[in-house]
Length: 309
Image 1 (cartoon, rainbow, N blue to C red):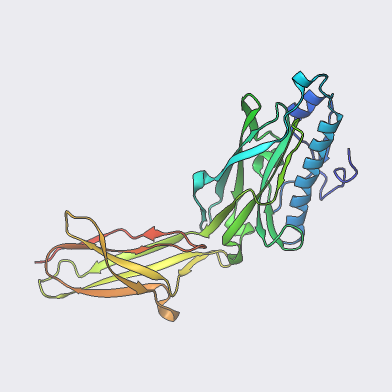
Image 2: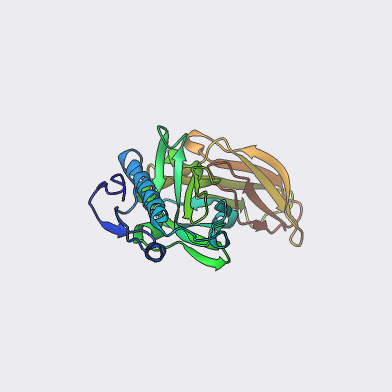
């Protein structure tokens, strides 16, 4: 094993990588790691080093494995990764208190024997000097294989990640993240990329809505008030989301909602607040809708119907 992979990273919890795959190669490889860190700075760097060390061990196992005796048993040219998805193609949305589980899936082709694979979530401009966050999977921490063979030289992989906003996130973590992914098989070329795909971690949003008074006399004024809020990962509370476009939608009691006007949410003491008026003519339902941003998911308020008499 390389001296790099034997480096004690933090508290020295011992873990073996991909035991089934390594046993098949005839080489037992140990790795000193600890549960992954997601905080910026040293913790993120250590989590990244753990993934690198595991990849190095998998490569060492491959190098030590018996070589094919004939062309009939030779390996293919390349390991190919495909079908990388986060949460089924959706952004991850995290509130202020509850831990969220994020699922990443990928498929490997091209090698008949898998020595190891890992996907990590990270944020920053680059993984050398601009890396802010790094998160290894629950499977990596528990030393269980994320991949199972699903066909001839094909593996299906699933990894999960726990994100606790109380201890792991600040507001600057909202936005674009990337997936770093490596895989070592008996194919000639392996996979090692820090940009398998881009995904978005967003601050959970909510939108209130109230149309009043109810009931209302025909010809009188109806006031529709809403408030757009999103999770604040610095204070662990919800706060008004200012200067954002929300759309006022209306419908008859049996019709479908349609946008009738667009407005910008308030600031200061009215942070996130929007208020519009309509003249009461017939029974009608009202709601606000927010289309979302790169840091905040879309949300639609529950409609409120007004009885006009």
